[in-house]
Length: 193
Image (tube, rainbow, N blue to C red; front, top):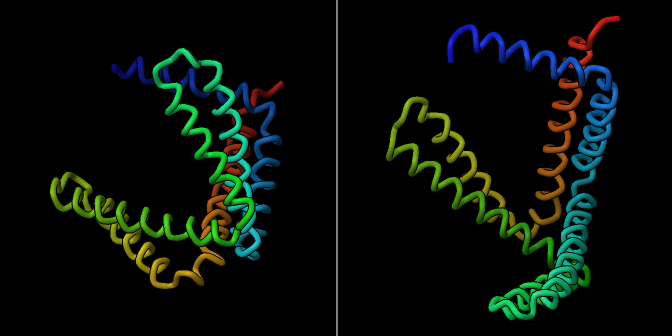
């Protein structure tokens, strides 16, 4: 891309963002709402964790019902039985999550610990194997993921009481700050009358 094309692209982006500037306050309000929900989750991680397990159960139940119904619309398809079986599995797991949300929380926490540990090992191996420019960042990220996974695993089942809610809360806080920052940036770019 030439310098002139790059300048044109930046100008076009500023024009597009300036158009959003009229709605800057909505971005800020969304950010504030997300940050508040995040702070509540951080302060009450047990409630947020349990709510997460219940929400996942409800989504699995609704998704399972939809998939079962959808499978009957495609009875002539060779994958009908697998489609139906997938829907039944989602439905059953959703019912189990809703019927025993604490047990679901225990399972989700173990799954999260495994995800962190396996993902961390893969990041470490990739960083050490390829040693591309900046390989220290994925190595550090992998070590942090691995340590988090091991800590969650070692503290299980007690970690199930706080891990999901705390992590979700932290994520919501940072998402909220992101939206607030975007809204304030858009305010400064809005067209002046």
